[in-house]
Length: 416
Image (cartoon, rainbow, N blue to C red; front, top):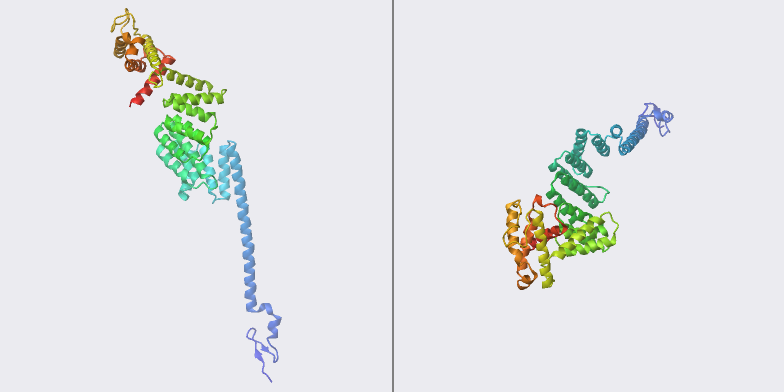
């Protein structure tokens, strides 16, 4: 007969013929391995429940942070900046890892005039992420308001080339550079402002409106050559780019002394939009350009008769200008002599110009000029010197005087 066996789990005898211990079968959950399994299962269940509770807790906090953030956005947009500060601070309590909340809080503090606090938050953000475009832009604005040009340039330039996320980087770069340009103009740093425009112009997409806008900005810094180029590019992209591009081209060409091109563009601008608010300004420029073109005796297309007529007309205008300056010239007086009873000239320069004009006066006749066409240059040199001589006692110049001054400037540029 088979002897009884001893159960290793409970220590009792296992009856012969039984495969395992009957006692242990009846107390299955009291076995050590079962107890271990049950313990592990309980711990796993507790871990799952705890994890779910933690996730619910964080989700609730995140929702509260977002709710306060949205309140802050609304208050900031409505100009309730102090309440926006409170809102964003509360949002940060529930969402401490939200850099966006920090940024909005800094903007609210700045709007509330608490600049140092705003800068502290922005500096902290910058140290965590130096490549954040919006943070660099905000720091640039703070530096600009403080008048710190060097610091503003550094932060604005960083903002231009940082990551703008989903926003079009080229458009963002233009916006930031334009803001920097405006700051530099306010600072009176026209050279650096012009440099920013040159950089902006080099990266423009084929958009006539943008070329026209940059052309107007070049006009602000008196860079008329680049302005003309921008307007021309706008019109090349779209011949019907609009009155702004055509008028801009006319203005730029006028300032460059290209009065023929200026007249063409200004006439077209006035035809396209005669009721524009700038009509009078454009009309005045057109009249002045036409006056310059009509006064120029050096136009190679002129007949000899017309050339001489213009030189005589210009000389007569210079004589009238001298008279307005208190230095009248008597056509009946001997060459080189002052008009009878004329007062002493206001300045040695005016006296010298009056003497030159008196000396030339007998030769300024149509018949004399026909026999000596080179005399036109000598006459016009005297005219230009008279018209370009500043004299407070002369009173405001006539339109013809202004035209002769512009003609003198163009002639001088051509001879350099």
